[in-house]
Image (cartoon, rainbow, N blue to C red; front, side, top):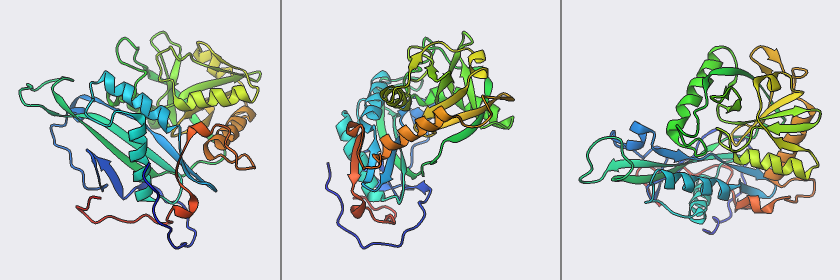
Length: 346
């Protein structure tokens, strides 16, 4: 990987800042994040022929680390094969190296959210207009955002959505295709218009699929249940992380079909995703879940997840070092990102 930047003078400690990083990666170059311009004919925009990921980088006493970047990029590349996106870096290692360099350039002063997007760009000569995967050029972009960790377990209020999760014979639900998120956007908009934070979607059989952008867990009598990965849902990397950590901590986790009644009668319900991390569902469509506040299992899962992502178990040890990719140690991370001038590439 690229060597870290030189040491910089210490700056006064400031609160981490939200917002887009100064640099982006676009079509083979590091460019100012405000510089890229896509043609109006961009195929990924017209037809949703794109795949994306959301990856977290966490800052702790040991520096900044990407969390499970390899798994995210392996999933991205599987989605690229599905959409015939081939003219981009082809290994997870290459994509991780690009991400590390971008994070070093942006030098966010806290936790970071990374958004890679691979998409169909322009019709190649001789390709007629229309919906197509072959005969269309490919592009890859990466942006980073300052995105502080929530800290304690979050509480969210959800609604069961009237929109159904598409089935896997209608849409490749186990790939993060941008076009597939129209349903999630509609469901989330419906829920928020009714005063809720998020939506939980059912599949075509009326069973629980997932939330708008998160997986669903139910707790009953200390046992955790979640819909099977073979269902009409995206089996999230955070979902896998939580299952692994809970099993290592001695908790029982079972995959099984869940009905809406299983949610309403649960002791706890919580959601998991890269963006949400762990969020306790305290209300569902006007009914309290359990006592109407975050429960002890969700709090414990949050603590387990926080330890895994930041390698802070009280002794600075990482239970799963294979999940962490070092970006730079703390002393190599400037407190304020440098701002590129317009039109400057490095």
